[in-house]
Image (cartoon, rainbow, N blue to C red; front, side, top):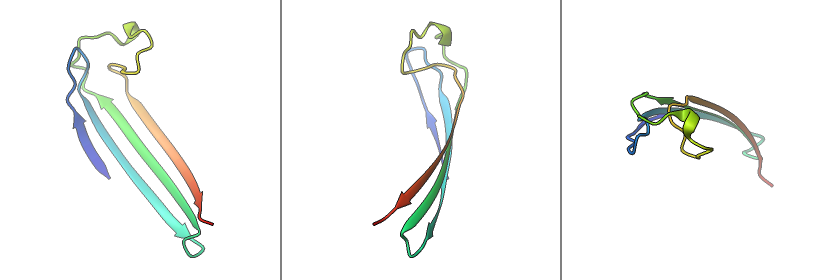
Length: 75
């Protein structure tokens, strides 16, 4: 598990980011199953409006939850 803080500038909101990863190895390490989670929580202290970002990669004041699963087969 990891926790970090993104101190933004130029009108963007600061963010608290929490994530974690779990995995298991099966069949003598031939098969690996992974699950990951990442939660990005803005602190809503930026001055830019998210509606006026014009498709910017750097969104503002948007909360994001990412769930990801992976299957790895080692030959």
